[in-house]
Image 1 (cartoon, rainbow, N blue to C red):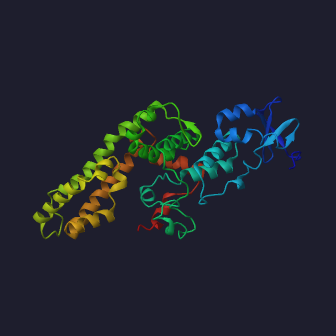
Image 2: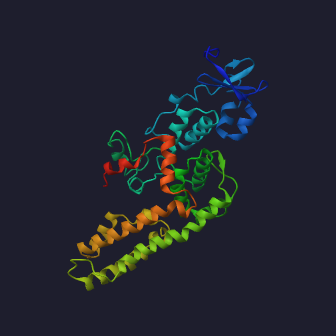
Image 3: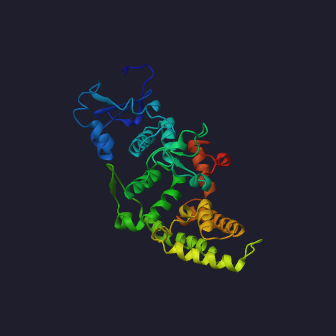
Length: 347
């Protein structure tokens, strides 16, 4: 390890002569306190804990650490599979020590499951879902659909993701993160309002305002789902429907059957995640609803979902999609840009 590189320079404001840990990031040098960093991060606590710290390199009496961790190439780029704990550690460290390329790489990973386009949101494929696995690596070179880390799991994990996004100013992922948290509000209970919850060694919490917006959003999302279900009972016949009275009876019966299902009642605050065109085709076919009526139901549903998506940032008191898109582009460029939507094939 060449710690006396001629181009090395100390970063003013993050160099303390009595610090006991020296951090090297390319040519930048920081001298800080292991104890303070350990309190801020469980990841750093593990790095600084003995015996690993005692066995590391030293320079001018301080321990030299994180030189490899903060190198950009130490963190594989998207779409390589990764973990939230790695994204969390790299993003916070890269932001703290102003490693721009590493921050960008971490933000791209963080953004992968949480898109700013409804089409991308609906057509994501995950490295971790059995039904998606065959599709994942047969995508175009831009891998515009792949979700490369497991973002679901314990509900508290989404709270930690939201807190990280706030801290890193990655606001463009928050509408979808908050949307998923709304589905989990009842399960989270008091944890939604807790100043600090813990998941995978990470402690974080939502602001009172964010928690309140997530909770209140439930009724707005239920209203959208109710509007969708009401399309089944619409008495206006579809153009070219040869049996309007019969189809209305069949659609009404289908609505009753669907709404009696436990999974539908439980997912009524998830209007974006339940009502897909292929679902309508299957349900309508099974219930003997004619093809013209199926098309009308699908078109109306897609319109309601698009309107709900457009309002999502407003529901959570966030900037509009257009502003969030500009923020995203400034940080991660064209990655996941909406212009890729037209190349996304829907199964």
